[in-house]
Structures are given as C-alpha cells and as structure tokens.
Length: 224
Image 1 (tube, one colour):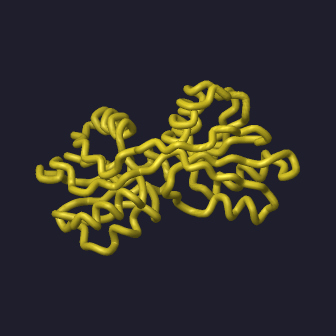
Image 2 (cartoon, rainbow, N blue to C red; image 1 turned 120 degrees about the vertical axis):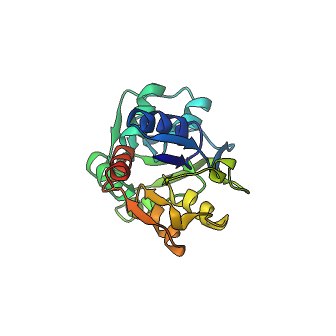
Image 3 (tube, rainbow, N blue to C red; image 1 turned 90 degrees about the vertical axis):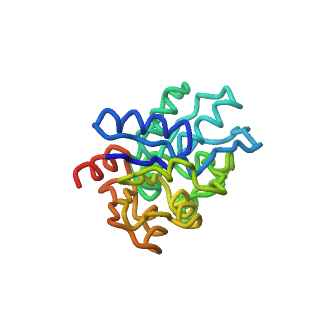
C-alpha cells in the first residue's frame, strides 16, 4: 500500500518510519509548512504551560530555557516531545482538546495563576473557552503558523492507495487544491474534525481513527 503523508516536516518523516515498519510504502507529500512566529516567551506568573502540538513544544524550547513549569499536552507524542525538551513534569490527555481541558481542571486550581497555551495560529476546538468557563485565566501565545501549500506536492502525481490527514488544515488544503484522484483513494483521518473538510468531495472511502492518536490512525488504515 502506497500512502501519502500530508503532515508537515519533520513529523512526516517520523510517520513515514512507522508506516514502513508496518509494511506500507510511505510517500512524503506535506501540505503544510511550519513557520515560527515571534511571540512573547515570558511565562512569569503561570502555573502551567499547555501544548497542543509538538511544534509548540519545539518553538518554545528554542527561545526559552525555562523547563520548571508543569506541562499539559493534548497527546502522548506532544508530552514526549516536552520531556525530550527537558520538562520533567509533562502530562498527556491522550485525546483531544476537550480531554485536555478535563485533565487541566483536575490538576490545576484557577486561583494559583494563569495558564499559558503555546500553539499555532490555527487551532482545533475551543480549549481556552472551556477553561475560561470554569474560571481559569488562559493566555494564548501564537508561536508558529502552519502555512498551506499553494500547489500540490509532486508526490500526488504518482500512483497512491491512501492519503493520511493528521489535521483539518491539511484536509482543507487538499480540497482547496482540487483533491485530484480522491474518488480512487482512501482518506485516513486522525479525527472527525480532520475528516469533515474531505466530505465535500467523493472518496473511495474515508476512515476515521477510533482515537486521535497516530497509532490508532495507522492501525485503522492498515486493517481496512
């Protein structure tokens, strides 16, 4: 099975390694490019940091030496990236932003200081809204932007069996660029949010991972 990977580098290369280990043939076809932004890295007065992507961890770690605050991450990969960056206390919600909000509300006290969410310009869900509604002060710092491709990668001209979508933004970009050959392809999506933009066009099949994790995504694709 030849599978196009639409997520941005360098994460796409790690996904390719996992696919190859599972017996599939990965094809790098990133539809997004991560562009760091200038942002306020001063986190004085915060009780914890929130990361909803490995890109957020990487961009913060590149500009700040601070590693003493607890970290709350949306998933295991993001929490692992935080630990690799030197954060000793990094906890994973192992789910989506609603699961992350639940984890934070269990562990943090609104009166003990603000929460700082370091992420991208485009977000899925309303994490801040859920937390603010429970009395938390949340500051959002935009540390990077996922820039959409203006043309399809050449990889899409080759014969493919499936396309992986790790985000709604990548899915939206593919559709905006014409979704060539979709009727003959399987779309494997990490979440319903990532699948929704694809339903504007016809596919051979759309598969949604049973949990918003890459292992669940790859398993769902290769078992169908």
